[in-house]
Amino acid sequence: MIIDQPIKKWFVSNTGEDKHFKSIIKSISWRIVGTIDTMVISYFVTGQLKMAISIGSIEVVSKVALYYFHERVWEKATKA
Image (tube, rainbow, N blue to C red):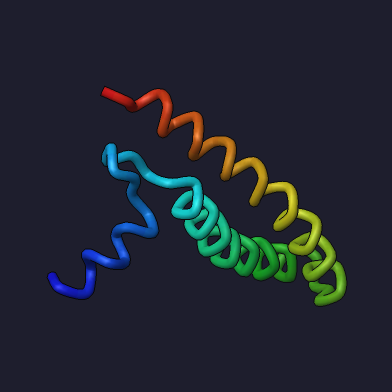
């Protein structure tokens, strides 16, 4: 309880809305998981490690941006 209050200030504004910083951190952490998944699937499909890494590298850049904008749209759409 005591530790979460200072950390919460990083992620939630005074009006109770999620800050952009929280969306950025969530985007990055989700992409790490998603990119590892993409690389594993790509490796199983192609059987080539180099190809799997190439596919994962391209997908990570595009999906970080897409997720960030998706998150911001949801934040606006779910305002009370």
